Length: 437
Image (cartoon, rainbow, N blue to C red; front, top):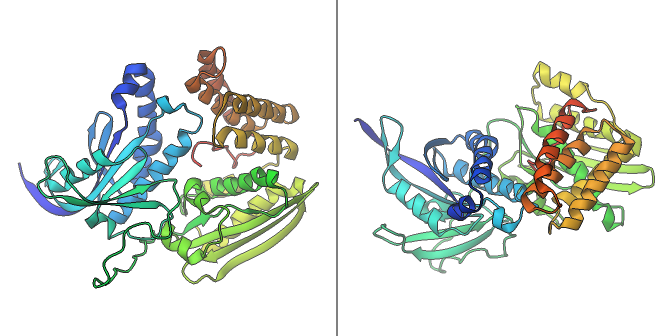
């Protein structure tokens, strides 16, 4: 069998406590893992130019041509899992450990890859904490950007069946970085410059969480909801790369340099803004900034009635497409034009329900409150697709956490409400997307 040698970045991932999960409920665990592969893992790998060359039951090995692509894929993967695990009991969550190494590998004619490059990545995965990403020194120094992710220098680490110690670093997704995340080189050794993440070939954007300027902390759900919906709308256009909600919300409440955000997230542009709500009026400011220069590409201020909120969101997305010169397909143009405003009060109840559903510290009481809010939204607008989607996710969380007296019935309720979300949507281009944020 012919073979070839090459340099490659290898990502190794494995489910934490898989035997325990399957022992407790094998059918449900396998079904959830299959869903994760089809809905999250495989699409994320494809977006970041990776190639799955081996599956190992609950694990996967992926080849990348670039360490930057591998790390970006791993961060998005782990961030998305954080959101998917929201509301799921700790002992039922599917978490991954991920290891990444770059080195010499041997590729067989059938596409399989072997060698130390693969072995080290797999061993690094084995020492990673649940939800974390463990990098070899070779991989780390190629992506050493200030990513607002806590970085721990693990030092020279002995890995099983690897002859020489490997200097390793751990990235803990969802934990803010300290001022000095890793140990610095000794004074006599020049510090290596922090490289930028490679920019994608197509237009790219990060939507930072809009600032709530209402003076009322309880209005955070509203400003967060608008930010999330704009992110969702932008992500439906194939010609634009949009950074996930989780990555962007690590900047919430912080004063940041947009140019640093661009370097950290690997994007060409950043959208930031503020929302002030007072009674039936809302003031929204939005500014699109070139992440390389810090210059404004577009900016606008809207003073409108709440009933004009959806028109404002649509105008913001269109202005972004125009400023970034994003080419829309005929189908995308139709979808953007075919938008119909729904009941603003129902939308407000939906945002409140989503805040309970996707916030931290999931409890039975918060589950009940989210159900009540979604049902109230449907009383006001029986065709509100987002409220149906919210009910569907709430019942899925109940199914996994056994909050209600009859959780097995929740799976059917989740399916029924998901069907309603699809068939009764009132805004064709605003399909609810609770899961991806």
